[in-house]
Length: 207
Image (cartoon, rainbow, N blue to C red; front, top):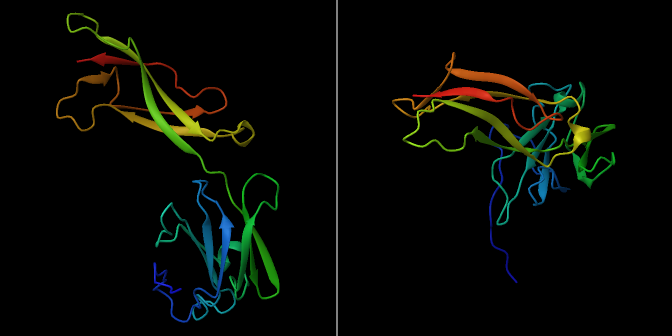
């Protein structure tokens, strides 16, 4: 059979970085269902900082291919001072810390650094109104609204001290507002994720 060029991954900023010296599958670190990759550049930054140099690039993939822009760049100086040839070897995809997330090991001169991946959550915001509908013939001007968040995946043990900070504005794209806060132009606050996924009711006035 014959091989055809599918895509090309490059880093353009550093010359002689040895980008691609090491490459490894590292599991699904962003938890989107697709395999991700780490690519080492063990000489990157050598001319600027000869005592601590080298980088590892993280690339995510999708159902069709690999994203050509890296999602994360990890420098030797991000981990510890005086790491040389950081990224000369990379391995990953195993859960070394037994926390349910893939970790990677990065080799340098005389050292191996284990990098732990963090949980990835997706937050979907939506509103709940009371009453849900207002008749055009009604004189009702007051509406209670709650801002809610659907967090996935949600593991209680990982959100023991986690707050979600929010800022709510109304009819931002409208020339004339149809509804307003009673006293302010916006509402700010924080939500403790373990206690509730919705804010306390906010009183709004229909204009």
